[in-house]
Length: 121
Image 1: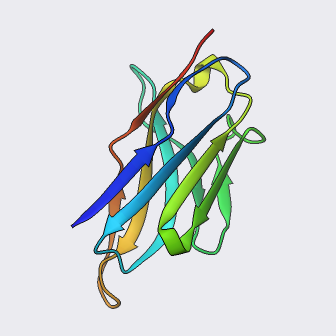
Image 2: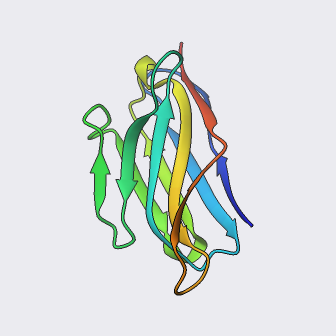
């Protein structure tokens, strides 16, 4: 059984910062790609940022220069530091982790439960 537990969402004023965390627990052998996605009301879920096990990152154009994704492989945890937040960043943020349950096992994609981020004055 694998669980992804997210934390760090909340209400913040425009220009403020938040840090999201997502920890994979349970029968995790190894993780590969980890990422963050978001879904605003009435919109489709969209990619925010991804990071490979080796640390290569990819960002949506809308968050480049403001958000930083990082990971701690020993803790099976991915982070999203969000700076200079704007009202249009308001959404439910979901983490996604690709992982294996055994050395020779298949890779599976897991989603977190989502955490609300609201940027408003």
